[in-house]
Image 1 (cartoon, rainbow, N blue to C red):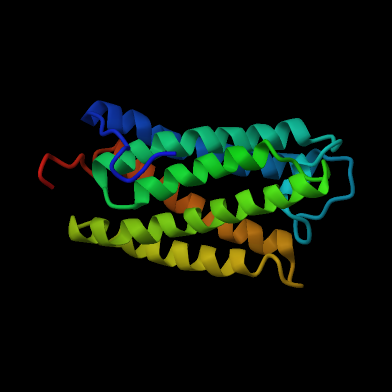
Image 2: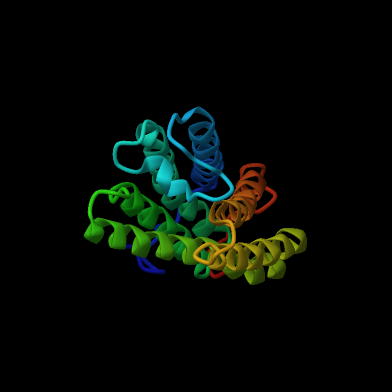
Length: 208
């Protein structure tokens, strides 16, 4: 797994290309769970049931939801390269970790066995924590470079995401709070990626 200093930097053009990972990954992930919930023939509630149930063993939407996990899992480490070149700090590391954890979630579907279910829960928790942490960790560097709106959005998104995801194992509607928590962080990823793509968040230079 990457360390903070092991994430390679890329050129301005490469940074903008890497930012696409954030856009495609987040949108692909959200589209997968919306579509899967809409087309499944299995009993399923987007309010009460976890997203991972759409990719459980022997569900009719396993292939689609798994594809959503994989798209997100591959795209976030790519997006982390853009964060590395523009934002710096620990945010690129947590973004990359979110991607790796999501791939592990895809590889450990629910209802396979008690052991796999436990691993699934562990990987999902790591992914949730690092996803919520990423916009918060990016806030200070963004504010320091003049991107205060994006920084404030990051803090709001990260805190909202953390609170919502913390509520998912309670008796409150799991699916609803999980979707709120993931969506706000995904929205920040897309907004940041677009800003990088358009050059509004520029590549850092050596010594910065």
